[in-house]
Image (cartoon, rainbow, N blue to C red):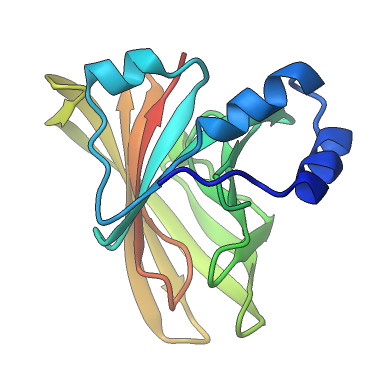
Length: 204
């Protein structure tokens, strides 16, 4: 179902956005759609889109397409039809911040790089309920795997990110899939109450 943002929000958003022109903004917003339970992106849907977008599935229940509206400081900023925003690292696809989701997060210190096979601690803010969480993170390369993407079987490199929330005594595993060193899919658990986000990345 397509939903148009309010005029009030559009005016605020236009004043803040530096990567697209004002004339293209209404069209960009219309390209963001919300579906239930799952949106399947095939070659036809991909070709029909003018802008880069992501397909986000939460616990395989709700599904949304968010459109890329800004690239700055190695961050991709995506917007949905209902004001939802997800900010990801431009190279790794890692979710750095969410806005207007039921349980938002924001990473305020990111020390771990996916490609470095490294380990360390990063600081994250959970919202609803609000909490400061320290994540113990380690990254490993798992090898190559074949997945289906845009109606084709593609061979990807898979990285595993192991996360331990010490305050909550919970462990999670996130997965990142790269084709020719470019992110095309990820599975990330970013908040203790949200479950897994499965994201497919479609770049124009």
